[in-house]
Image 1 (cartoon, rainbow, N blue to C red):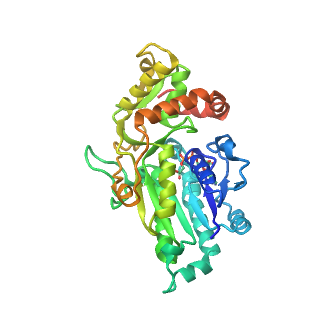
Image 2 (cartoon, protein in one colour):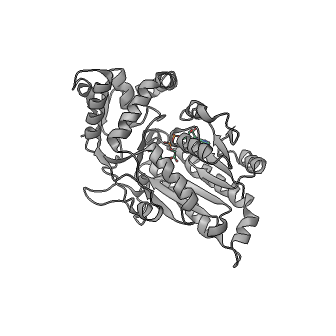
Image 3 (spheres, protein in one colour):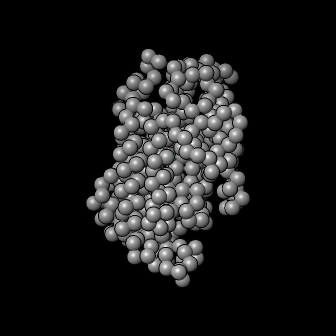
Length: 364
Ligand code: NAD
């Protein structure tokens, strides 16, 4: 069956890597990239594939019900990989409603459209002689975060069975959208799958998030604002490895299941920043220790989760997925990319980014 795969949020950080992978790997499928191009969306992220014959971009907001109706009909959408979201925890603390609108209402809008547009097939799918796993005519795949599980103590890992316990407006909105996706699977038999991934890093990451923010600040010799005592722990995964995992879950994930995705790669923020400073000093030909002197401890983020760590053994075991690069390699490739894409960095850090930066980091 010919697939017309709608990828939402494909002009953003992770979405752009997923779109590129699918466009290049599946010339027989149509890839439709739906993105509202908010501050985080940037068509420069996917410039290399914009003329591919199996690729189309549509500027639309997932809150716009009639636009979704039109897009499903015009492209005869068979599958959805949903990544569009407001994604930055700090912004969610300032403007929680934006996160409710896009992440919760936007996701429910998409679910409604998929349920409506696929309704005849879903009825057939549920008849007794239908073998869904071999036919696999539709899938609604929700890409989510490990932050829905809340915070861990010094030991333990998040498994797919860990109860949801979100602490920030961002994670609460993603938890809510995960619940709606699962509920549509149970209530309306919509074929769904969810994955919850740890912190991503890599090329095209908007410099409000820790790693690209610090790369940009090191380049410009600006302070490196580290929250609280710097001992917050995150599990980091290279974005291209996340895209590979998404491809596997899309093709082989079992309907109704959740897959945790992570690299068993925990770093405290301060250890990570020191490694980044060391690698950047080498790349920039600066004296060892020069960038570390830029580290500045600032007041903590409200509701800051102490530790996240993913147990990825289910996806390892069932789908054979493992990260392909070490953290040191991935970080090096990321630094290279930012140093070689100075124009991209300059463009995204101009204008309104400056106002945002002042508000976030001055006087803390
Ligand atoms: P991002 O902020 O870089 O990109 C989000 C994209 O969604 C942007 O292109 C933006 O224009 C688009 N968008 C926002 N609101 C929209 C709307 N109303 N309608 C249509 N498009 C809209 O985010 P990201 O870091 O690439 O994250 C993508 C997804 O992966 C999110 O759902 C996020 O929760 C999830 N996730 C992110 C991470 C991470 O470390 N970045 C980890 C796990 C899961």
